[in-house]
Image (cartoon, rainbow, N blue to C red; front, side):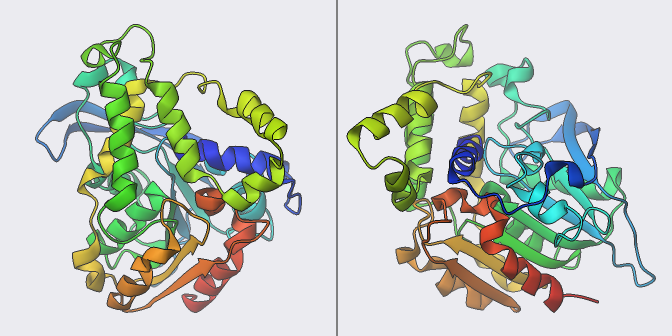
Length: 360
């Protein structure tokens, strides 16, 4: 996410892992914009033109049976498709490089910017708090329109996503059960947003809207509560074992805070953040898990404080999915809490298993 893309980025920069391919070795991405006219949102609001920005790598190929080499990868809250391209410790230098599991010379990789994110239509483009109040269903509909109408992909080799994109993966499996061979949700739960996961979102939304300078979304400078929102996001996405290893003393902890966490990210907009955090309100795939036909490899990390393992929710629900496996990654020096979802070096062997299992 920015939200959790920012957390993952900070963790990756500090972790010192260097067993990945050079960023220059994977194919250059192609950028595009797809405009959906008169897009109608779940709540009845309509946008005359909804812009979905995206990146692709590789060339689309389809075999005689209609199976394509297309892979859809969806980002987390506050992130964008670009987050999978840099830094190279993320997907690009590990998965997309020559010889990688998703080598861009063999696969057609689709990286959308979701509604409200990146270079897609969002509140900060001008409508501010008058922007339609999108939810996850709206985002998945727009993703599907991009894949099928703009890129002319009828069948996907793999659908995967991190955090919010993880949740979208479950929704894709239910909404379009015959459209993909495999699903890989990374770092989420297949139930509605509840418990602490809902409460920290409530906290962030309240911090923004209750800021005296929010002015019903018509602010001239970023509302004061946005700084506390960033603090909460860091805290829930942090990894205690790793954090202690890089901040073993009071002074190192203070220095880390001052150098990395004391300033808000440049260009951050409170309405964008508010809408992003609020959009999960409709998420609840639990009832339709049994309709998923694709083979599923769900992966969480044991140090993920947003999806803590002691809840045992995925273990309880995964049995409803016909062809599914759940992997809980143990806490190690390489895991980064919630941000582990963006470190394929930690979990790529399970992606390899999934691709092998679903090979044609």
